[in-house]
Image (cartoon, rainbow, N blue to C red; front, side, top):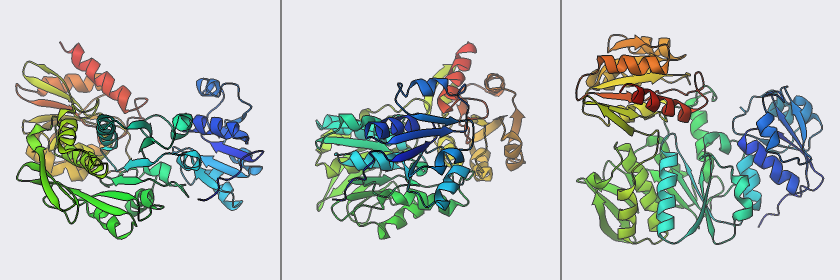
Length: 454
C-alpha cells in the first residue's frame, strides 16, 4: 500500500472556494497543512463561503487570478470548476508542484471501497438507483461527489464496511494520481463541455481516467452500445461487465432481449423484468437501470431485489419530470438536459407533438444533431438565452422558431401555440448560467411558471 503524503506543516494552496474547495481546505487544515485558499471572486462575493471555513486558520487570497497564492506553495489542490489553463495552474506547472483534485485528496484517506459513476448523461439517476439497490441489500453507504456533497466532506463517516458511491465528472478526474474505484461505471460519452476541452477526444480521455488505477480484482461496467465507451474494454485491467439496450452482450452483463431485461452472469441467463415495467420515461433510462443491475450482480443481489429496485424508481426532479397537464397540454421539466445528446434523448422519448423550449449558455454543442428529431416530433421551438441565435441558425428550414425574452415568456408562448395532446418540453441543450444559478433553479422556475398558467 502506497504511503499517504505527509501534510503536516506543508504549504498547500486550494484554488477555488466552492463546495469542494471549502471541504478540501478543512481536511487539509485538520491534517496539519498550512492552507491558503484563492479565488478570483472578491471577499464580498464569497462571504457565505468564507463563513463555512468555520474560523479555521486558513489564509485567504481573493479577488485575483491565484498566482500570488501559488508562489510559495508546495502543493496545489484544484477545484473542479477551475480550468487547467488557469494562470494559477500554469504557474504551478511551471514550478513543477504536485497538482491534485479534491477527489484525489479524498482517496488518500478513504478506507472504503469506491463505486464511481461517470458519463455525459445519467450519472445522478444511476447513482441514486445504485444507492437504493445497495440499501435494499443491507449495505452501509455514503453518497457524494459531483452529486452535490464533496467527497472530502464524508471522510469522518467512513470505515472498511462502508461503500462510497461517488458521482464523478470529467473535471474531477483531470488531476488524479491514486484515485482507485473498486467498481468504475462509464454510462456514455457524447460531446459536452467543449467550451473547456480543446477537442472531443480530450473530453473522452478525461473520462477514461476513471479506471486509470484499477487492478485485476476490480470491476469496470461499460455501455456496449457507445462506441467510445466500448473501446475502453481494451484499456482496463479490471473485470468487464457490459450493458446494452441494442441486444446481447459479449461476456457477462445486462441487456434487452425482445423487450425483456435480461442478465447473463456466471454462466446463466435470467429475466429481470419487462422494459415496460420501468417507470422512468425514455429509453436512455433503461441504460441507467442496466448499470445499476450490473452492480447488483457484482454484489450477488437476488433477481427480485434488482427487479424491485429498478422498476419502482420514479426518476429524479428536472430529468424528464412530468409537471402538469393543462387543457390537454402536458408539461415536462428536463432542465438537467445541459447538452445536445440529453435533449435528443428527451425528444425521442415522446410520440406526441412537442413544443420545445431550449437555449441557454452555449457549450460549443452541435445543435444540427437535433434537426431530424425536430422535423419528426416538434411543432415549434421556443429559444432562450445566449445560444438562441446559434440555435436558430442550426434549425433553419426545419422548424418554426420563436425567440423569448425570459423563461416566463417562453412558457407562455409555448402554451399559446400548443394544442390538446401536445407536449411542452423544457430541454435546453445548454447550461443555465446565462440566466440562472444552476439547472435546478431553471427547472423550479419553469414549474412555477407552468403553475402560473392556470
